[in-house]
Amino acid sequence: AARALSFKTAFGKSTVPKVSQSFCNNSRALCVSAKADSGNVLPIDLRGKRAFVAGVADDQGFGWAISKALTQAGAEVILGTWVPALNIFETSLRRGKFDESRVLSDGSLMEFAKVYAMDAVYDSPEDVPESVKTNKRYAANSEFTVSEVAAKVKEDFGSIDIVVHSLANGPEVAKPLLETSRGGYLAAVSASTYSFVSMVQRFAPIMNEGGSFISLTYLAGERVVPGYGGGMSSAKAALESDTKVLAWEAGRKHNVRVNTISAGPLGSRAAKAIGFIDDMIQYSGKCSPLSQRELQAEEVGNVATFLCSPLASAVTGTCLYVDHGLHIMGLGVDSPIFADKIKN
Image (cartoon, rainbow, N blue to C red; front, side):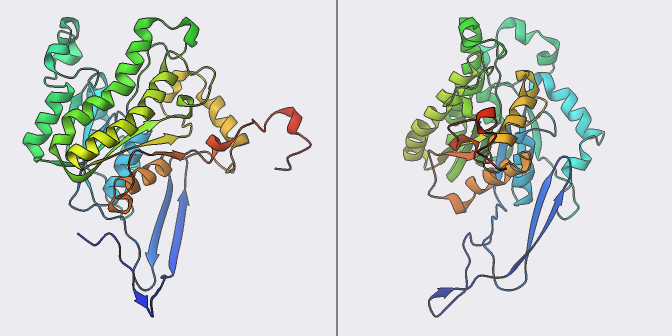
């Protein structure tokens, strides 16, 4: 693999190559390609690395965008797809419905080394209720718990370098916290937070030293976002706290890194379950420092790829914001009281 850092120097000073950039922007993608005219560039080179991405069920969300960015950087990508969505996902993939979204910068199509059935709510087979085992969607897919999937990845591939946790679920997300049941609250934390802990427990032992775990969080974990209920704000707060503790424990025990990305609102199919994602996108556009356009999933994918690369070898336990700067704001500047004070 190419060296992670490569600069030419002259008389003790770094020489920076001229880089020509081309941008293509459509409804689904913001593509950035760079070509060096001379000299060397600082690469994100993941050739020879293997990534497991949990939570990809279509071509719209952050998980897909991260998978694509990792593939673009040269990594081999394996997927873990929620059992109830697996058949539809594989059928759509096989029939070419995602082909437009699979196109890489060289014109080839993104490929997945393997797609596993996975339900990260269950750690091991004994955790699966009989009603789930006999459900027709689950009955057709065996070995879908976290421990079983990790064991199959080890059997099929030997080891892993990158694990991406791109999944969350809150059955009562539309309810205010004051109306959330104990069951709904605990279900949100189980699916959205403990699932990451479980994955680090099971995948860290098969991860190569220097490997990287990534999860996805949201601003509601540290600020009040009315409407983001059902215990999901608590789940995200716990996820961010767990990121720090796991960074310490897994770092010392396995020499791997653990980080999370706080992504801005995206109108994916999964996000629409919240019920007001379009309002959040509009609010972000009006109140963020970078308000010229909506956040693109590919921007999160690019940052995730950086965090998984040797360029971020000293970064762990961090929550990195990819939200056009919305997290720094203390006031909503879309309020009428600012109408005469803010020019743009």
